Amino acid sequence: MKASVGDHIEVPGEKVGEGGRSGEVMEVRGPDGAPPYLVRWSDGHEGLYFPGPDAVVQHMTSSGA
Image (cartoon, rainbow, N blue to C red):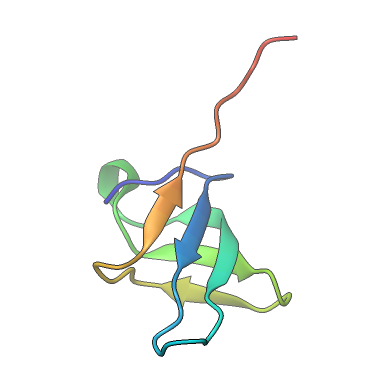
């Protein structure tokens, strides 16, 4: 998995009916976009995150306006 600052991470809930969580990558600490990532979660908490196989990175694209 590779991510960049500004990308979003989506993690599904662990149990049926349980909501997942999402957050923004604030810092990439591994080489070449590899984990771990410092993530600011949608509830405002920040933490170091090592993604599991169910995590999905939504890459943010920069558009020149």
